[in-house]
Image 1 (cartoon, one colour):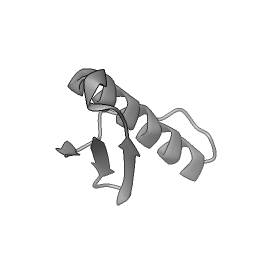
Image 2 (cartoon, one colour):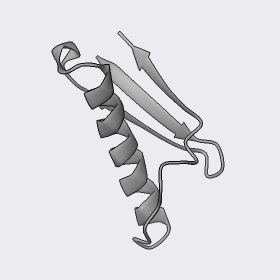
Image 3 (tube, helix red, strand yellow):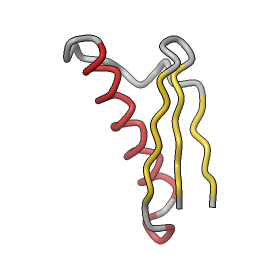
Image 4 (spheres, rainbow, N blue to C red):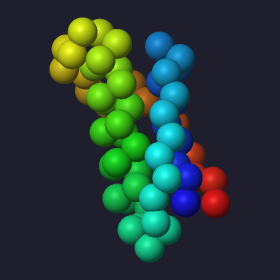
Length: 60
């Protein structure tokens, strides 16, 4: 299953592919951690929260 997250403030988007058996909550947590990592990297590794994430969408 492919899961994507998008940050509207920075226009950053990330996607991951994981097993559907992992469950929605785990895949959502993984994609948000990935987005957090990408945003931190863009900002010079400063700590970034995931509260600004606009949406997480699943696509089978």
